[in-house]
Length: 382
Image 1 (cartoon, helix red, strand yellow):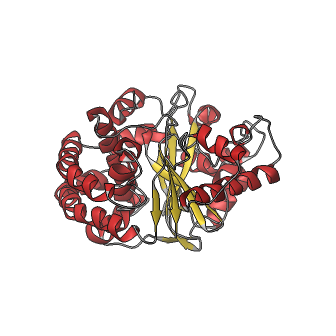
Image 2 (cartoon, helix red, strand yellow; image 1 turned 45 degrees about the horizontal axis):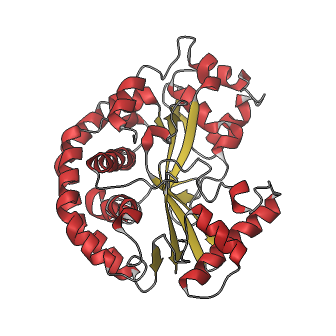
């Protein structure tokens, strides 16, 4: 059964700091670096490569600079390079007392449980609003070229979660609810968070749903869900992309991914592709036995109509969020986040917890079906 955000937060609230202390337990904890951005707006270095995320966690949990500099992570890397990079690019500062202070959202299990609560009443209200709007949304989308070849169970996760709540809606929420641009930091404009993950869970940190896309020539291939780190994610697969299941070197793997996405485009446009390629795409669940696509396709032609379906729901969603804003501001003001990030950034990370909880509620309602792969896969043709 799909994970429930409230159950995770309640069951794991005490896990954040093991009894041995944060410095000694940090190697046993798992974290994910998440960025909300458009285009080339990303941090100037990979946080995970130098344990920068874990260093931010340690600063949040009261470990001194000297202790962090001398600490060695499980792979032998020291804390000093990460500290220096974080200082250099402004992700870490010293406050007036000289204490270390992150300038990104450090979302440990304990902190989120206490300081980013998702109100069950707000989730229920949003779920009911989506259930009310869903028949109209499905009727409109089902007639679009790119969706009309599918059953609604093949794209309900994409439409109701990714469409009405997440990727296709987030710009509206920023413009109409928080009325704020993404913060400028380290050469770009983006939100940044370090999120603690339950190591026993198959889902991403806090069960948050999100997108993972990549460009393959003229096509954009994407997956959506909260299991993007699994081998069911096209961008992470290796053996499944080859007919004999052999593990291939990285260059061959990149070429194979590119060719498979090009083949999906050929299927969409009714062009011929090899039988071997069709067999792979069928085994992956992207093409039916009869040779038709089994994933949604967003194109330049159908995007305006799809976007109109999303935008029609925006006033309802924005109204729910604005109504909840005073309560959320009060929680923020009494939290450590008030000294580290703006309310707008706090809100956007809370928003991800919230819409993921709504998505889970819709799954439990039977309105959303999680594909066998665990993620929703789609093709975009700009």
